[in-house]
Image (tube, rainbow, N blue to C red; front, top):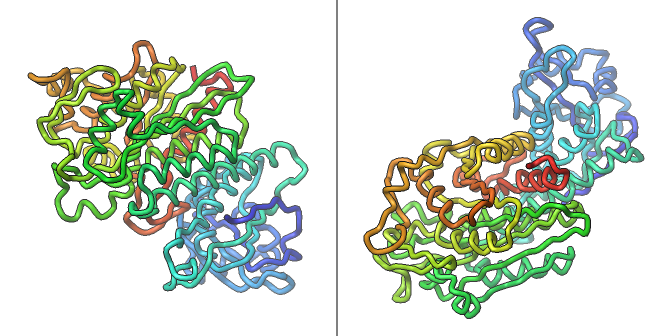
Length: 510
């Protein structure tokens, strides 16, 4: 993991491989051209105040995600200046928002793969800015090379950036230290979620995932309870058992409990953990199987969030439920037309075995409801329909309470995770009526993401506030990296969940 420090050193005298500065598109009412962002004054001065002109000559425009490299000026102990685009210059008397800083830091960190140390001289006006830059740099420096020879990508031959020094930071300031420590905890656990998502399914199956959770529990003082297949049979967890019945890798339900002696509220988090999804008997068509190791991204997010909360010592009780199964076709697999008796006692007619995530979540949601938490949030790569609706970078939020849905949306936007509130139209519930069982696991094709949300709502205990995050789009990035987001597993929803825990602890989440 990339090391992180706050530094009061002057830019010219700092020894590093590179110094990172920010540039922006000037506001039309002012210069209209390239603007060197605050934090880079010493670098600009060394260029006799002509750094913007030099960068424009090299083709820089200040656009978000743009990187321009040039030799450091005379007198600097760093050989390289890396100018990263921040996007439009803020209005007068305003500063760059946290997400712009986060993305710029991530872009710069990715551009500096192979470097031992980089000094970041991005705009830093307060502790929140320091936290955003630190988070962006740590997430941007992520690399998954565990399965590459010698532990690094042979095509690039470069290890991730090893150390980040935030210039302008205040190492002795309590707020700055707390912001950086928070960024470190959240980023490290989010990157651990990325590792889990990227791990091949032959190595990450339900039992293996449960073992990872147990090890983390011992390390961070989290109580971990694992229900194996025998315990699931005894407990009547028909949804998890039905989905996992076709695989030789038996299912698990993992409960992680973090408790604080000062807690006044209890937040439950439930994650879909299909370690590989073939579709079961309703087999996915060719071209749709290759990335299905990512179908446990919801469980990875919940796991990472609980560990981050424990590391931060938040004054809130948080319980994480990981519903783990592998969905495979075989002679023992659940069939279209089968009826499962869920943990709640409700029966479900399975019309499509590829609508399996809602089945494992249903059991975990009811188990979470039995503890009467103040709120439940589930996270799942649940439906392709949500990807069609919101694209590959935005996740959908559904809830049984409008105010809570709005609060979750605000938390997501605050931490830089694009999300959008979605409805739960009552008329769609009729499509899941079954002549054989209490409910079917499929309904109308149109609005399929909303249908899935309505199904899950059936398994939330009465009177419990609940939200459902469908992260099918942004959970796994099949395109090129951007900002602090890598190719592959992204760790989407981890930061939202941690922020919800913080708001619950402070009493600002209902």
